[in-house]
Image (cartoon, rainbow, N blue to C red):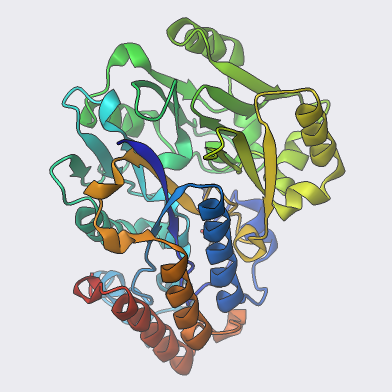
Length: 417
Ligand code: SUG
């Protein structure tokens, strides 16, 4: 029984605002602010509870070892001696954004009928470039069944940021789909983090049918306006593509190709005259989770910031009143993650598969979320000020907190990966 599972990254105990991602305007705007890891992680859990209430299957990915001593050792230093910029980059809780963990092609799309996952190399940003070994260790455990093929990252210099730049359209999650890879081209004010070469390599690794695979260029204006990943300006679920008018470099060609391959696709485009790119990026309207609730209703899970933006909220109300394909809007509070440029969709990795084939330690129900919440409430730091990032007591607390979570989830075998 193939169904969509959302694997959310649990916000790690070292969550902080160091402004490490140029081109991610929220993160750079909040550089130096005080972060609240405990509240951040509990907000993430509340979002997962809301997903469960919609009848969805929910999974988790875990915080990585922070500081990343292995990465610092590969740079011939260690936490006490490292310069401040390396300390911050070794301490980031960025693995919380699970949409950047991997690209996933479910079995119905793959020539060998296995579900393929390629871990993202995240080479563009130094603080994210060392995520992949721990991500790979988790994916190899969670998806150890032979139904899955878990691939090592595409080599540098071809930047790959995972599912955040990948959309899948299909009649139903268990049916063959069209996979759309969105890449950026360098030359603008901010880095293009997804390279076409990486996406093409992933499509080959996943044995996708070229006739059902599209490579689409992100519009340079979107990247320049702060859409550092495609999932900031577009999201897809089943037959629906929901996108901003300025998301793609050549929307006419892309939409024509999509309609040719999938005639019953429903493209919901938000015109710039209703919602500007700036409003879209500030509100994260498109960084929503578009899901099929157990009632069958296409439901858009948006951050609270979308309700606070008048242009965005009135567009959503008009869409609902006009009987558009999105039938319900749910609002979640993930403000701590949002302040680093991570909305509801950034926090989750979608895997369409049979849940009985997944290691159950990576799946959650309400009771397990309660246990996780207890660990967070007991161990996660309440606040991290920017200038506390090098603090020895804080480092010790962060290490203890992660260990407590792994113990509670019976995942101690992963503790040092
Ligand atoms: O890679 N922020 C992340 C946000 C990732 C959002 N993911 C998706 N759009 N799918 C990034 O820019 C900020 C960390 C800091 O500055 O400390 C950060 O890494």
